[in-house]
Image (cartoon, rainbow, N blue to C red; front, side, top):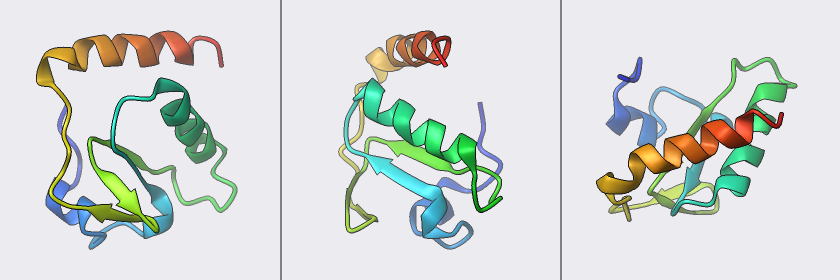
Length: 88
């Protein structure tokens, strides 16, 4: 599915406030699900946020170049995350 914004602008914080971005270096479904829940609560009414998997962070800023994920595992990751979301 295509993003509504340019990924380079998203990663560099040019179009979205940093408070609405989470960077996760690797696949950790529980940690990612916690971030999704936080964005869903949206206390400040920002309209959610973005979790970018495959990029490490330091002090909330991305560490480039991206670590990336193995493309052969993406479907499995999506399935695991969908399964976890059914518990919410």
